[in-house]
Image 1 (cartoon, one colour):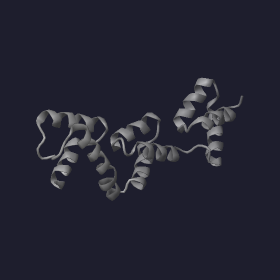
Image 2 (cartoon, rainbow, N blue to C red):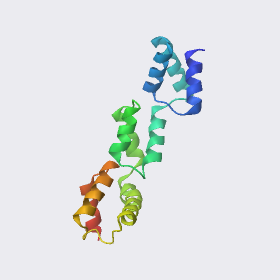
Image 3 (cartoon, helix red, strand yellow):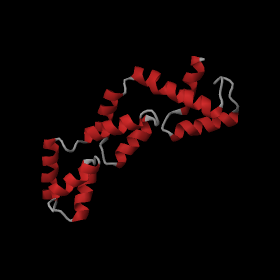
Image 4 (tube, rainbow, N blue to C red):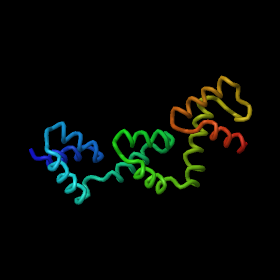
Length: 151
């Protein structure tokens, strides 16, 4: 099996980044020149694109996680921070971020922690809320301040 056909079989199942494909090729025992030729061919044909992979990750995780968690997921796949920042700027205009998924997150938090007014939260609930938001990659202090000012 050639390196190119091996990569085509991998990409038929799911998207891989360039660095992931390089690691897979090295593990399989292919030469670096052969790996590079196969990657060049796949990118010319449009079968592999780090940019498209970042777009898919952002679109699938955007309403669940904050920027830092999504960025870490991309970094784990070997995608550069420059590509991530470019795609993030295209797919998340500030106005959409403010009104779109933050409203969904606010409604979810209100249901989960039974909050009626963000200005009157006891410390125990506030700590749980901070942990919930922080775990998902949001800045909990900034978001809570926005929600309190909104009310």
